[in-house]
Image (cartoon, rainbow, N blue to C red):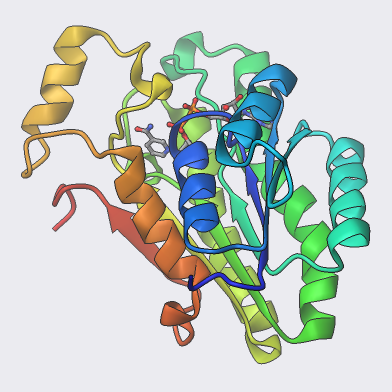
Length: 246
Ligand SMILES: NC(=O)c1ccc[n+]([C@@H]2O[C@H](COP(=O)([O-])OP(=O)(O)OC[C@H]3O[C@@H](n4cnc5c(N)ncnc54)[C@H](O)[C@@H]3O)[C@@H](O)[C@H]2O)c1
């Protein structure tokens, strides 16, 4: 019950890695887990699968790229539950294309959802965390930040997440707030469904452990960085990749 007494927010948690993280925080004793997602029906259902009575978990329809939508939800949670101790910035999208074929809206969508969301959500929680002298922020980056075919938009957004994480960690370190990120390689979620079979075989061949990551394995890493077990770790990027980057 390492999260006993804590209030957490997990963005993009209707499915995949975000849902696994929300479940892990809930199972490890969080007082309240706010699950946020752009998909209203799925997020309400996801929250109810954790807690049918919605006493210790609740679903919120939020577009993390929309500052007003984010502000409204975070304000409501802080007013009702008194604080936010843990923020997991997980919501993310891909809109892959070779650079010469990439359309403006593919660039804008990925930067808005994956990177601008970091600013939008952290802006809401950092003031309260500073006042209380406690906060744990975990951001989802990706190894695509180190270079990947057809992902200039995604790689730029995730490289931005790493830089954002390190700079925010500097700004908040004296307030006992830790800010870290996780860079997964390939995890078995819907995000990978669009990848052609031949490309998937190429990905697998490059992973020393010879398999995709599981959402629960990412949740374990996120829970570590969200817990007091990582109290002296800040500004780090933890690569979770089955050995791909050793
Ligand atoms: N799956 C992978 O292989 C992989 C690898 C590296 C990094 N990541 C990162 O991990 C995170 C989770 O990925 P996943 O694989 O679980 O993806 P997923 O597509 O399964 O889930 C993403 C969730 O984010 C939600 N979402 C999308 N846009 C949103 C918005 N504007 N506002 C709120 N919610 C929104 C979706 O509705 C969905 O529920 C992402 O940031 C992704 O970039 C995933």
